[in-house]
Length: 301
Image (tube, rainbow, N blue to C red):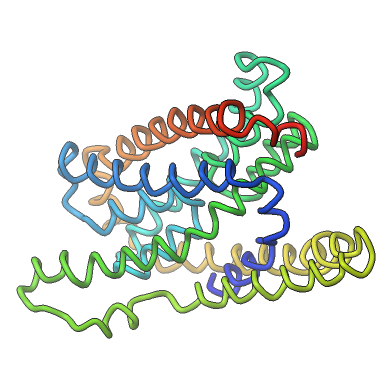
């Protein structure tokens, strides 16, 4: 899974992110941490979830980008394999539903002139998996697919940020409360998932090549990097690595322990309530940013 996530970083091309501009960055980088914090608070204070690690993993899964974020978060807080399996399972089920339902909802209730950009931004900020985001966007059209995929790319950048703060929170607060022993700052570094650094490095390297090729010949970067190496090899190997990792997670999962985690249905309630809040906040924020604050962007995308 770590190798697969590093390959995912190669898809995050800064030049594409810039085309969406401040509006897309605001939608992804303000809504996502807000949803994470509110959902985590809801799980602890309202649902009274016993496992803070399960709570944090589901919050990351639902608010950032599904399985990738769940694995990074689980690594940062040392969640049990069963807790990670549950979070991944919830993500897959709801992603499959949202991928089909959201395009239909957008066509039914959002005005035609706003469906492509507003609908694309809404799906990009809420559907968990990048592949599902692209597929859902394609139902509406190429522009919606582009906006949705780019918003999701911007959101994916937060994998490392969220993992870092989870590592800090659990090492300096949660585990101190559990054990009564303080830990040094170096423990945060040990806990931090190192593959996130590879994720960032891949993004920087491939973004640089993308810009260099485009500077030589217009469209060459897209042909060589985005539709060439990344599309042809990166996507293929990432899919295989992810598939192998999911099989491995399944083989090492204790379903008796998993049964204890889902007792009372609290993880399901947490995911449904958190995703509902995410859907509402993302739609409102996308409308404000693209049609009130930066309306000129809709003509250039």
